[in-house]
Length: 309
Image (cartoon, rainbow, N blue to C red; front, side):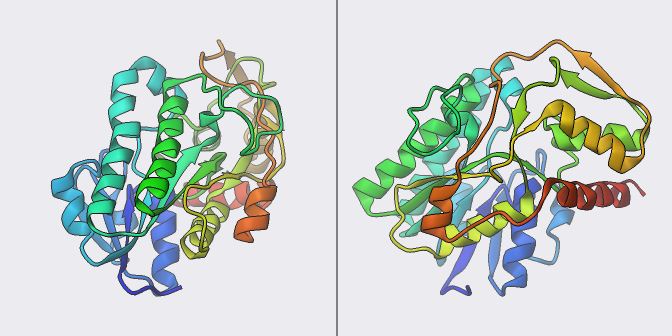
């Protein structure tokens, strides 16, 4: 997949970013990471790429990194439904505004390929299963910000001929996610390994589609390679629906924890179900998820165990 020019990964020291950087570097790609290091950790990618420390939404930071660049993978973002409800304006700046600034910097630098990390939260509460043809109805500022980013990718593709594509991530889990305290898998795994009870918000009947980060990185690679997809949106998930209670029970079983489960009040802005149709990604990108939940949880638990030692 080696290109004529480096790939810029914004947020590349974060969870998905660190996994992607390792994968791209192993494939022989030259990678430049732009990350403000608020949550990402430089040591996760040390020796794999050049790291530019700064805000991906700042043209003075991103502009120089884009010189000679062949593609941008834009992962930098405010994350999580709950934080966006607590501070909508912070989410707006770190989510939608940063995406527009990154798109504009890429346009000015003559970059043709731009891959944007969106989320199933952009769709919100709609008829199941989720797919690209559903009319979005976001329930949180985070979802609204991701939807705005998708719209700007489509606009930059139509107006400027940029191959900008949006990938709607389902609930991603895997190595390098220790800081993702609002995500169920790292939260459950961390507490289980400490012998603490797992906290479920609500009765545990809410369902999600949990996808391993390696499958997400594989889809990003396909989006970097596939021609003629500017302005397109793709749902990325496993197609398997799992309740939060089922996830918690599985984590307890795989870690051997007997700490049990405690329930907290349900949080606002979260959808009840997530069932995803990934047929478009399979048809257009030639991508399919490969890693089962049990297999992925085992590798994630192993990584968390090593990170604690």
